[in-house]
Amino acid sequence: MEAIIQDSYNGIDDLKIKEVEEPKLSPFSALVETKYTPVLPYDWRTETGELQMIRPVKLPIVIGYGFGGIVKSVGSLRNNNLVGQKVIGASISGSNSTLVDSKMPPLLFKVPEGVDLAAATSIIGGADAALGIINKLHLDTTDKVLITGASGGIGTYLIQLLRLRHIKVIAMGHTSNLKFLKKVGADEVIDYTENISEQLLYHNDITQVVDTAGNIKLLEAISEINSSKNIVSIATNRFSNFIHPNIFPSDYEKLLRMLLKGELHAYIQDVFSYKDVRMAQSISQKHHSQGRILLSY
Image 1 (spheres, rainbow, N blue to C red):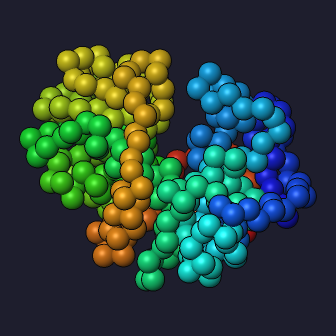
Image 2 (image 1 turned 90 degrees about the vertical axis):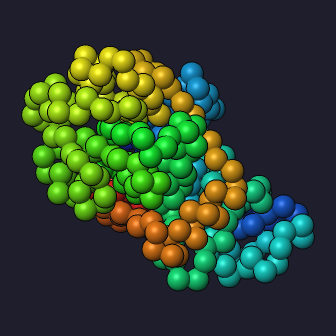
């Protein structure tokens, strides 16, 4: 099988696609033919060594952790009814390979009929993080939340989940994404290419700032105007309160049901072949997002 390999800390351009040995079926295995993997900041930050303090790894590694695919076969201790099913999941040993050996049942979830597999895959590193943030913050309808990185794979889900709870949302984004952010559901938008301080003066009732982008200059500008407001981040610990948005397996099933019912929409910016991983990561890192970029297999 083929896998996307990181064997240095030289960043995106040093990624390699290599032939690797197929996993051998164990009693706990669910072998999944990979169809999609999400392109995440977690990937390229690992590739430069930025996350070594919180995620030490021994190179070489298969990059990524989220995947969506079809179960090909299962071991003797797994449910045989999984074979042929659409699933999403997470793999701590890496997910960007044509075949994933999922050995942890709590990290594999059936995708309901009627839910597109690409859309379901965007939950991993997207809707799960957004829901985890909300669970940690204990917000209610009196809150007004400012989101940075609002047009990305986490931000688009965060806007939707907050609005479903009738919490007002101010989305911060690039000029080119303001209409998109209103379409996603933001009550109001702030253009970070304009005078941020001046715009924030009209929003002195913000109660919570959620940073998904890790842009220190933006956070400094926000803090100057809203110094008394809570700022939490899942992207940096250099300026704000850093949080790990954990959720339970049942939450993934809940998010999948919400996609099925149309309560949530998966915004997918683009889909690239896994062989074009360097291009996909570069675009995701350097350009203005409108949802999640996926790799296809």
